[in-house]
Image (cartoon, rainbow, N blue to C red; front, side):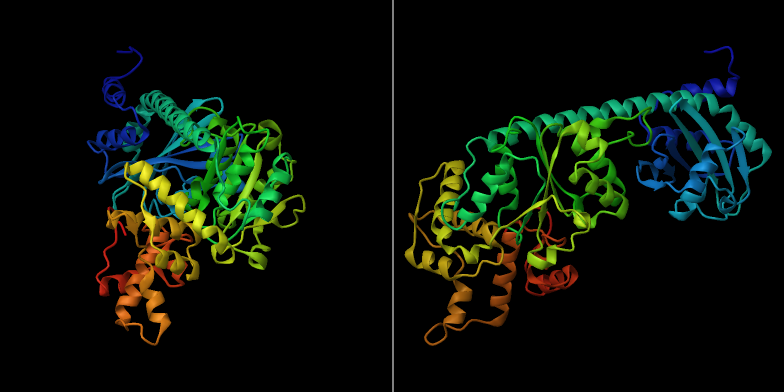
Length: 495
């Protein structure tokens, strides 16, 4: 053991050196300190001077250690307080009185009246971290507690550096594995991709796609959920000179708000892993290719401004990566004009995709296409579609568009092995025919309608592309109605 360390520091180094993750290190630190100090919680955040962003690294309490990478803020007063912090060890009687602890108090991670010990850890020239040790409620840290924490400063800095490097390598491996898997599938799916209706109901749309495929102008594709916006974006990519470069697609609403900036643009590795890693963001990973984004209206104002800079072609990141940006918007017509990221942008080309009910001539070909795909995948003989079912398909209004049609075909093939296929969409049509049609209970109509919506959304209830949004009701209302009608939902349930 290093002769420059006292016995307690040597023991601490041996204990902390076994940690390979930040959350594991914080948990071991908490357990070690609790032998002499009334510690309730340990939390770490890192500051990258280049980006001037305070980012949480993780925390540990009685429930164990956990990784948390949310951004805590970038206001000048917080950055100034952190960068000008004086002594390596600071004691604060109340967390609310410490400017450095302000982000943690604001996010409810540390109580404002908690006693604190703040340990400054220098990782390298481009990054430093602050470790916050919070006392148990009603107890205060003393100068002796501060001396104990001071003896841990060197072992903590050494172990934290190792943990951050480990996290960085692990995240890079995951990123590369995801890229290899996604790009391999994307290349396979993109070669010979077929747009059903390209010469019929989507003829005008495909003419516009071909016209702009050779340019680098950004593209806005609008249409109702399920019309095939993602397929058209991918088609535009594979018709362009970028076809051998990456095509990456992302639904931003599914990304936690604090991680959207890193997901899009990359930047410093979460929890400050020792330097910037631009490979983490979609735009750097898609260098020379295309990025298609859904849910851009959910971005915060600073991210919208940065993305608008890329769309306009003036941002440094866009110049370095040469990425073409496409926006996929579920809002149609005038409702999409207020898309925040497009405010003041005139270079973008807009393509509106008509819903399936406005291009019914595509329905027979879509039916046969989905039948062939499903039968080929399940190694079964191709059935013949019942003519009455085909007519009902032509008459149906398809609120879920192509996605709902695909779900109906897949469900019908699962429910029957007959040579003549009857599609399960007739209950609503029977009820609307009147006259000699058999009347059914209202609950049955409602249940069947809910099931069709769940089929169209793949069983998803909440969110902008969920069944609740499709039906125009609150997700909690829909779940309550499903319980009443005894419609199962949750993981593993298929419709």
